[in-house]
Length: 85
Image 1: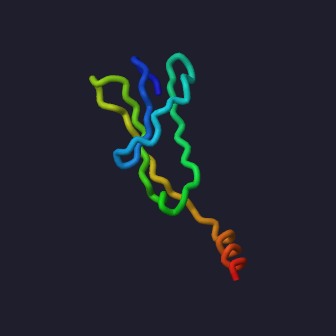
Image 2: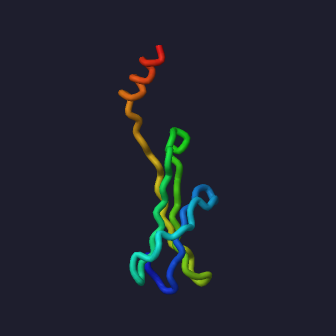
Image 3: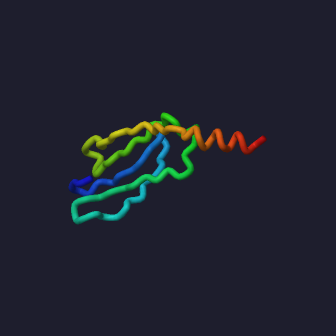
């Protein structure tokens, strides 16, 4: 994100702040925040995550959302089930 003053970039889920730590300035004008979600599981399926950028109280924050979608590798599950017997 770019802007003056520099924006603060944050990640949210259902109104809860997930991450507000900047990756550091990419350049004099660019700020980034990378969200990492380790150990995703079935409970995360279709979770909506929102990225917001704000730089003052005078303007509305910019935002965009993503929906987590994942596929399961059935061969791995079948092998695990077969090894249980």
